[in-house]
Amino acid sequence: MHVISIISTKGGEGKSTHAANLSGFCADAGLRTLLIDGDYAQPTASSYYHLQYEAPYGLYELLMLTADLNQPQQLISQTTIANLDLIISNDPHEQLKTAMMHAPDGRLRLRNLLQHPAFSGYDVVIIDSQGARSIMLELVMLATNHSAVAMIKPVVPDVREFLRGTIPLMEGLLPYKGFGIALPPVRILVNCMDYTNLAKEALTAITKIIDEGTYSSTDIPVSMLATQIFDLDVYKLGHSLSQPAHRLEYQTDRRTPPAAQSIHDLACELFPEWTARFDVVLQNQPKGDK
Image (cartoon, rainbow, N blue to C red):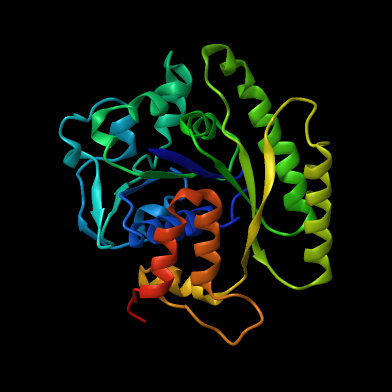
């Protein structure tokens, strides 16, 4: 089971949108996929897709240990997208943050819970996170066993926020290596890319910093994803229709690649062992309602 997280210490970077789109694409490729909404402040991923079954519990009960994992239907909802399940965020009063801060196993609780047999049937678990540096983001990072996808828009302030937010957060988690817990590699995904000079300059700046390894004095694995997500209205349309964007756009006359190609390329980069499955999605072109 691959557990990946979509992270940023800044809000509005597109984490929820692309956690949902990547989840939908993996599900259409036939992978058993679980999307966990870990953003209690703005639980966008919880309402991205329509549900055919809504569980009475969610993230709050999972982390507070009040749900019976031997009855997973208590907290795992089923979306109308085949193969895609969801654990909703249901902590509007932000009680989890305090509870996990004071629990002896707080930062490791989600990591430990995902070892339960209730989750063993999933191929992929994708965790959306809050856009802020907090214990909840630390908890998500430590639960990640595959990759942490860091969302960055191609503007200099967002690059700076990554360097002063995400990197220090990871440096603070390095002591967990003493417990045999390796930090996941961080893979930077540029979102809302365009062809302006400002975007190109910001991309050049962050690429140079990563290539030269000047982002940290410690051994934190960070790399750039080759895939870039362009600023397209189809992603907003997909959200409004409760459909993954790839179902809405397989071809385009624009200079930019269609949404289906971008999400396909992202999935292949993250999970190269399933490239053949992802190729089939482009061949079959499952459709969503427009």
